Length: 332
Image (cartoon, rainbow, N blue to C red; front, side, top):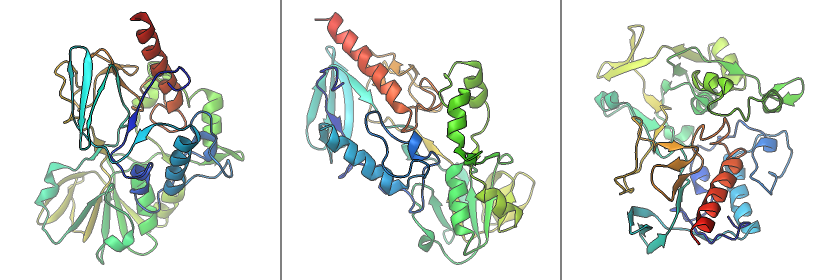
């Protein structure tokens, strides 16, 4: 938008740019190497083969905004957005904004999702969602259960297994991919084979979406093989007796970390014409919603495999900016 000469403002509820990354668990690293973790116009600094940490990613975003002099209003939390007479009105804790267009770039990781039965566990069980987990010091002595077999669950399970007995509850057998193959990043091969930027509606794109996400790296596989991490079946319920699993077993744990994903949260969006899907996400066509002037950027499979990744969001951002530019030019 800056290149196109379109005036814009970015608002962020955090006090510092990149804090949404800094506030994640201490050991978090991206599963994409620096080569595939940069935004347009500024490569991610450092060894291109190394996987950046959460703090390095946060600092990179802050430096990116400084380099391109992006107009960002921090400490600004949106409380309501409505549309009247062709204009959007956004109320925040600081002031009100009015604009012809709004791009929602809050991403897919908005509000931690917990199963409803989590509240059935006794109060002495230490429960955390992965978004609230920071490090092992938060845990009580004793066995720990990680519920959820995504990459966050894998990383946390591996970290904890060095100092306590850890169990991982999954709905399906984890599928592992190496971080490197033939001396090159697995994402290099994804790129060469057309997987990395597979369009969402292509055959390969639909095929990938129909399968669970892979676990990148082989550490978890090795820890499971060595029995340092116990693999359990899907968590189905909870009670004062403990956690219930799909194989009929019940087991008690002192700590439970729910790596059960996130859900969309658009309580602040007061526009009746916005359509929502069953999972709470906004219905859109490649980022274009059913409301004129309302757009999305950074959603999973918005147009391709990498739409929700730092290294792939740039193409969708460029596309939405050009659509806004064309719309503005056609009305002047």
